[in-house]
Length: 329
Ligand SMILES: NC(=O)c1ccc[n+]([C@@H]2O[C@H](COP(=O)([O-])OP(=O)(O)OC[C@H]3O[C@@H](n4cnc5c(N)ncnc54)[C@H](OP(=O)(O)O)[C@@H]3O)[C@@H](O)[C@H]2O)c1
Image 1 (cartoon, rainbow, N blue to C red):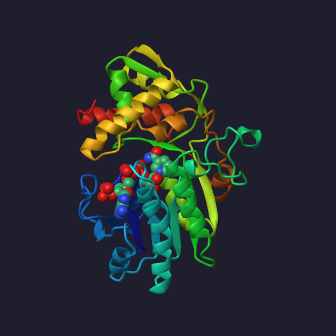
Image 2: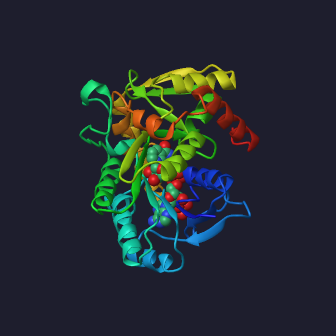
């Protein structure tokens, strides 16, 4: 059995990666911190591996204990109050990780970095209004810039076997940011915020994790992929699908971006008291203003024969069923 380390295993994508990897017969090491929740890591076959990416010495300490055939660097900071936190984990930790693996003669067969479409930014100013691997990266958020920096640092390690995955917005059970949208629609309220002519892309979490594990095995070193479900959606389609599944109608409230920006500033200020960074934040507002998040997944189809199993409708249905089964909705 190949030993596979998945960092960020306690998170939304990470917990699904662990399940899919166990199903595929890997000896799965769930990379977590002391403070991480094990709520979605209950399978008895999981081995826990303490790994904190916030300092190089912590990484060294952790990696002295085990060698892995494969590593998926999925841990990431998606919301943070300051730039340093984004760069520390999304960029510097990737570089440190590789350095330590090389130094300890523990280079795996493949190291997969989970980046983000945000690293390349929206399709707005791109040729043919589509983000491709040849596009000039133009991230619009600190998060995106930190992911791009992580990719650049990784590429500098010549001869190191890696692949990079850039998912678009991921949805599915256990996800907590989009959950706000489901909850509001359930309360018959729909906030139309940002650019309503926006073109959006999504991927269901189970399709994403299958793609990640296929890329890990099948694709050559140095490869990189955007991941969506292959469709492009209008701004209203995601909400319309939730309404259809919940069999509800809503009162629509259209909010100008300027007002949303003020709301984001207020929610950032309020949450600074609690120590959390809110789902509605100034970075999110920058993303809402963009025209299109369409991107090219043709190399994913060619290299791993990627065929998403879930339509948006099927994915949202499964997500709603899950939320309802836990009384979250
Ligand atoms: N969700 C999306 O729509 C989306 C889209 C594109 C790319 N991505 C990328 O996919 C990956 C997973 O995202 P997600 O949505 O699953 O996020 P998530 O639920 O917030 O999970 C993030 C994970 O990273 C871990 N982590 C954060 N800082 C760490 C550190 N210093 N040391 C060790 N672990 C640390 C967290 O551990 P704790 O539980 O201990 O905090 C958690 O397990 C991220 O790299 C993200 O950038 C996500």
